[in-house]
Length: 216
Image 1 (cartoon, rainbow, N blue to C red):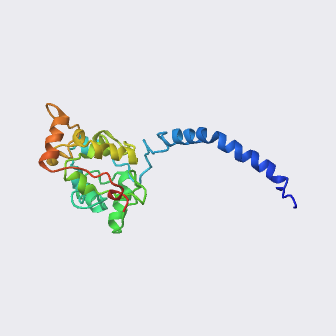
Image 2 (cartoon, helix red, strand yellow):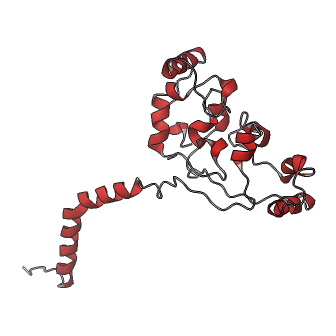
Image 3 (cartoon, rainbow, N blue to C red):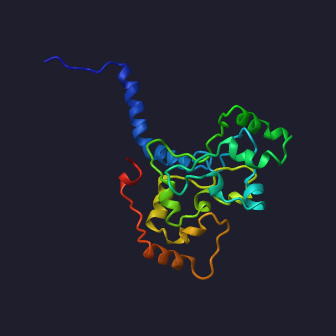
């Protein structure tokens, strides 16, 4: 019977396969470590916007409520981005000659949309509903950080699956009375976790952790 022999080139291939198998755990650990790097999960991501809108000024100093601009946050999956008209409600009389506001005036005159760059984003295969969180007492700053202190918005939280699941499994520390969701620096008297437990019990809040909650 003829003896079958692998071609000579497979000897080199075999060495690479053995090397990959031996180093597999090391490669997996390295990949896992890389995946946790802040730049990988976009913590601190701060794209340049068409207008340097200051939340520190508008929210922190002037006290503008988040819902003035993000009008659909309590009734829709998405938080609306305000049209130029919203800006011009004030800026027809305030800083009317400001050079940095020129894109706003041009968009308003042309009835066009300002091309804001999304800061907080999740993959297309992830479903997130703003209204489901806001109306149940998850404050804006839980996910977005102290917006009232940001000259320009950057990504504050990890927004990873594990980060979301941690909150769904233990929501109490992140809950507050729904009417206070836009309050920055929320610091209630007493035990915040216990207050959150009461809010969860009173409103029957029991966040699901099954895959179909976010992957639909």
